[in-house]
Image (cartoon, rainbow, N blue to C red; front, side, top):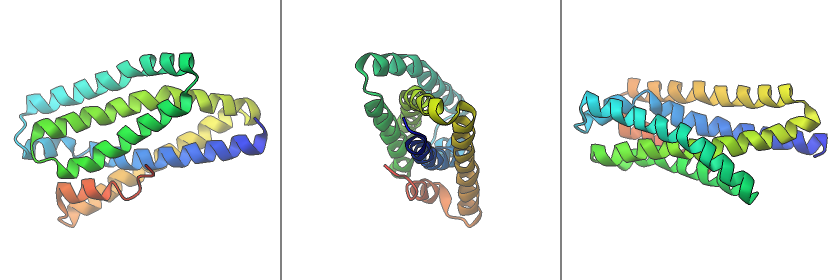
Length: 176
């Protein structure tokens, strides 16, 4: 991979990660109260959060293995991003906690599907332009999204927009 192509790739993936983090990190802080507003108990909220993390981390080794065996890293990345970017805005439409809980778990699963393949592709780009530079640039864009998403969500709630408005707004930057 040539240096210029590698840099373009890293910037594009970084922008995708910015928007993915903008969307799901914006939603993460209000998932518990939202589930509670739909009638879920604190025990259910805790179980859903734990199950989501289990799915997200458990799928990483599985999706990474199958992406390597099939040589379809892009397919796994696109699938993961699509699940990620569909699940959070769909929370705006959830009227009952079981559906909302399923979407929360699906979002974490989407991240588990995409994360190892994206990291593998970034490491390949790092061979051309430097692993530290690739990691730093990608992480900077990723963390910028993780900062601005919750800030937007806080602003929406402050202005009395409500949970559904916040989840709906999370769909606006979604690239998928």
